Image (cartoon, rainbow, N blue to C red; front, side, top):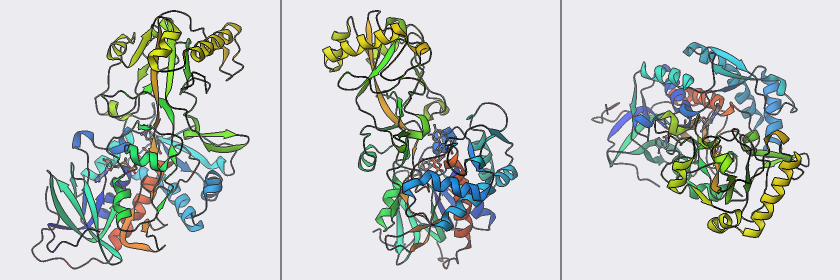
Length: 497
Ligand SMILES: Cc1cc2nc3c(=O)[nH]c(=O)nc-3n(C[C@H](O)[C@H](O)[C@H](O)COP(=O)(O)OP(=O)(O)OC[C@H]3O[C@@H](n4cnc5c(N)ncnc54)[C@H](O)[C@@H]3O)c2cc1C
């Protein structure tokens, strides 16, 4: 555990760690309640915003609180275990309160149809809101929150990752952070709020906690590396929902680009996906048929986590190559930050880069990518028969989306499972307090957002952002309400950075 510094470098009332929707909401609320707030962000300013900024910016709003609670319980299913009735009620009530709160910030809520599990009890309450007319995304909600932070006296420090929490007995009294390669300490007189996102960009952690998806990559921010989980664990926090992720979807990960790219598939038909044994394993399509329901699938009437038989290759022919660019990115991190890779329309630049491999025959292609040649040849031949008959008896791909893979040369592109976000992290209660392994809240430590989210299993789209606002407000208000520790003589309060 981190030692308590003999002399603190800086001092404030509330330290918020991580500047996405949850951090912004917590900082705004604590500031409005009269607290001095420092908001620490690991990313440089040009990469600000975390997953929040690059998200589709849609918010799940339960129109009725009791129905919202019923829907929540149904989605959690067998994973409801350790979520208290009170917690569920507070979640539903605060998610409901989000609309009015966002309207006060300037949101123009526009409903869009998106009930992900319409047969579940309570589903009739589901409304999904975007900010204003027009397509989803576009950072429109992010700009509102960013403007609300900017007009308040909140000290925001980019490129300043929190490194550890300082615990004194039963409570957290400050944070060790890093700026310009140097460590420094900030004493938090009232409280610390963890809002530093999940572990989407920490491959080792993903392998530890998520079964059946050994090589997962994020489509969102590469800065969410599970720091909050490490920091909270070090001081004895209990973890929950670590195995629940929004994903997988099938994407492409270029070695040179830190996040995975979405695929652009509907333009052509002569392609299929195969596993390591050369066999098809899914109905190919958009968005790759494994991205629906945020990565959960219904089998035998039971919902379960989708897994994928990696490595996976997309196999296609010359006709498909000429039909348009296969890679794309829409709402993901790379595009928003202006780094978007400009995929060539004929896919030849990507062939030259070695991202797409090519050979004159299907057998030679199989050898090139290390698949059993006979198996791949027979899979392609069976797929071609299905295309000729207009009926895919193996995977029920729609007849209109089938065309035979027959025109040489042939191509293979390795696909990767990708994820939108993780849900796990330190467990919190209805007051947004982080809970210790002994079941009691750790004093003065709060959390909000996808770091230790309430979602344990099935997930309704818009729920993460809604939870950021709901528990960001609770965390900010409760941290600001803590009785402050005594100010230290001579330590700068709210140091400018
Ligand atoms: C492409 C995409 C689309 C999505 N669309 C939606 C949607 O429409 N609706 C919805 O509800 N959900 C959506 N999600 C999920 C949702 O965006 C996130 O779950 C939510 O925004 C998380 O917000 P947050 O504030 O908890 O974390 P983030 O917004 O990720 O912010 C966490 C911040 O903490 C910073 N950080 C990390 N470590 C440290 C550290 N040690 N010290 C200081 N700072 C640190 C990170 O750099 C980051 O800026 C989407 C996600 C993606 C990737």
